[in-house]
View (cartoon, rainbow, N blue to C red):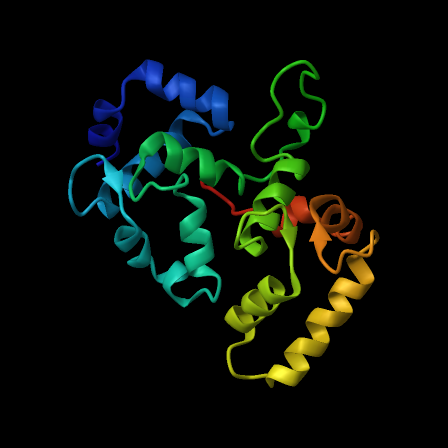
Length: 195
C-alpha cells in the first residue's frame, strides 16, 4: 500500500512538502495513504464530509472548528498539499529545529504559528479578536450541557477580564499570547506522527 501511495506522489512534490512542512519522506507517504483512504470521491481532494468520517474528529467537541481550519476561506475542498500544511501545525518541534535558520520562513509548527492556529479556532467571525459571544460559543462546544449558561457566562467574563489588557472587552491575539505564555503550547498542540 505504501508503494502505491508514493508512486502517485512525485518525488519533487514530496521534496517540496518536506521543505514546507518539516515532515519526513515516510511520514508524507504514510499521510498520503491516509489522505487517499479518506478521499471517498477519489478526486484528489477531501470534503468536510470526508473529515467528519474520522472518528477522533467526530467525537471532538471542537471537531467542526478543526475541520474548518483545513479549508481556505470560501473553499469546500482541500488538496493533499493544503491537508499537509494544516497538519504541520500539529507536528512536534524536534530539538534540532529550535536553532533553525533565522532568515528562512518560520516553520508551520512554530509556537507562534500554533498560537495563531488556536486563536483562529476561537475567533469565529475572523475579526482578529475573541469576543465574549465567541468565547461562550466555543465553551458551549467544549462542555455541552454539563454547565449552566450562567456558569459559562461567568467563566467567559472572568477569562476576558483576566486577558483583556486594553479594555475593549475582547481578547486580541497579543492578549491571547500573553495569557498562554507559560503554557507549553508546543507540546499541547502536537500529534505524534509515526516516522
